[in-house]
Amino acid sequence: MTPPAAGGCQCGAVRYRLTAPATWTGYCHCRMCQRAHGAPAVVWLTVPSDGIVFDRGAPQWYRSSPEAERGFCTMCGSPLAWRPVATRGDDPGIDIAATTLDDSTAVAPQMHLWCDSAMPWLAIDDHLPRKPQGRAS
Image (cartoon, one colour):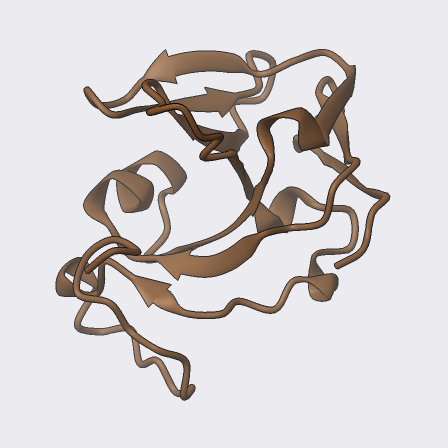
């Protein structure tokens, strides 16, 4: 995916554009993402923190765990983003829910994360790498 890419929430109250290319894309099967999105997996793309501009509205941030917060639209409730709350000097970036892009077909996931909590009834028929937990596992 090459910038500029744009997207937003379901109702259009929040619109964003990416000004930097994605540094990572992948499926997340963790229980927090499953609950937050009401889906068995979520495809995320990571951009540098300064690589997203909110052109209309902005997400409301909710502290979903001690490590991270999630951004959503206050009008329609669409989950849009995830970001860590503490950084250790380097920029971990911000994750954008890939299907909120206007053209989400441009996103090609690189791997599956948190496969230890993947739904057993979801058949995954690809050859992407799988991690039992996060990126470092």
